[in-house]
Image (cartoon, rainbow, N blue to C red; front, side, top):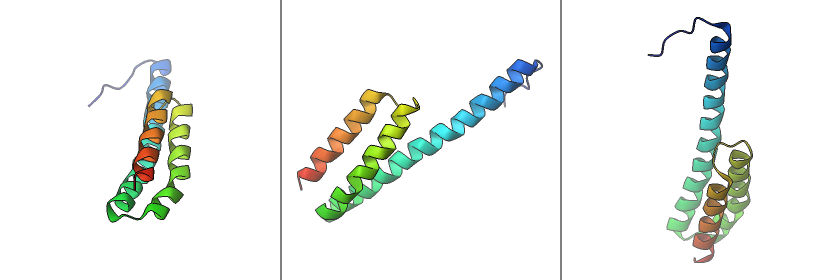
Amino acid sequence: MSEIPNIASASKRLRQSEKRKGLNRSRKAALKRVVKQIRLHIDAGEKSEAVSLLPQLAKAADKASKRNTIHKNRASRIKSRWVKKVQAL
């Protein structure tokens, strides 16, 4: 358990970091959710359903990247890899 800050500015920083932590987790979870759906469609051989999820993947990756939840190169890499996997079906 973390210690309780004594200084007002430290309390504010703690509140801000906890809020950002929650937002970052939700952005990463949204990205993982779309990736999981695409993976399930690829495993089932459903190319059209997987293709229809690619814009959602791009949106989730770009949002996470824009807010520095993930690095922009990681977002690009994720999009590129999943597009290749879907096209290979």
